[in-house]
Amino acid sequence: MGTGELAALTAAALWACSSLVYSRAQLSAWQINFGKNILASLILCLHLFILTSLAGRSMFSADWSTWTLLAISSIVGIVIGDTFYFRSLQILGPRRALIVSTTSPLFATVIGWVGLGESLGIVSLLGIFLTLAGITIVVAERSSGQESVGHKPASLKRGVMMGLLGSICNAGGATFSHLGTLGSEGLSAAGCDPLEATVIRVCVAAASSILVGLATGALLTTARQAFNWSILKTYLPAVICGPWLGIWMSQIAYRQCQLAIAITLTCTTPLFVMPLLRIVYGYRITMRGFIGAIVALTGVYLTVKG
Image 1 (cartoon, one colour):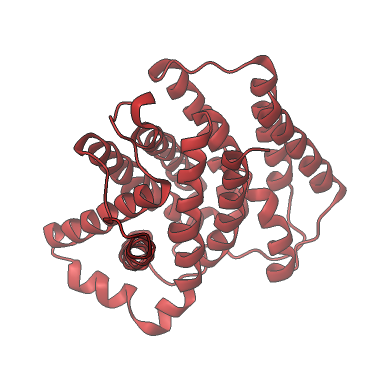
Image 2 (image 1 turned 90 degrees about the vertical axis):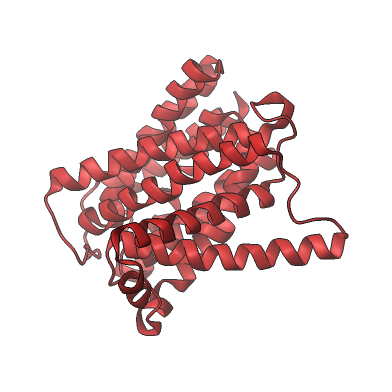
């Protein structure tokens, strides 16, 4: 297994942790996204500053084309896509929201094929299919324990719609990020280090969130709610796992793997969620769940080896 594939699976594990935390946050989807974008941008800037200072180089080396691609990726995938996903998470709960989120590789495969000219072999395509099928089996079964439902409920139809929109945005954002980090192989001339790409994406997301707040006149209200310590401490661990470490790992995957493979592996999040649901909500892993996990892991193996 290569660096890119390992990074993608690590990102999936980190996002599993953050998904459970976000589903319990007493905020609107936009307030969660606003808070995590601002906090993550500060943490990531400090991270990059320390590393580049120790290495004796400037923080940013990306050219304008890379910045443009990563900025578009940020707006589509993080600002818009994450807001849709968080809303789906609130409505459907972590298990069912993850069913919908597994459609991202399908959208990414189409985008990679039509827009980037990427071609996948039969084995890789079979692996993607088995991975998605296995994940669906795992998360579609009925829970014997009580899962956390959203604090702002809505109809099932709306939850699914929010999830699908989030998946489309995730695939689109990943495409632009993939292009921005590739360098001479993509649309940018120089490409970008995965950590620098992560900082650019999250900082653009933070700036965009502030601009939206100013435009709507809700900046102060949103900031007060998102940064209220009693609420902030409940989702701060998710900020560390998701937009800091998780997006960083995903950027490594986008640089090292084909787009469809990278997104398929990052969508194995439900497999990592299962033991967490057992610990947090008393969810019992059934034979169906075990079989689904085996099918999904077989798919991951074929995707990587194909």
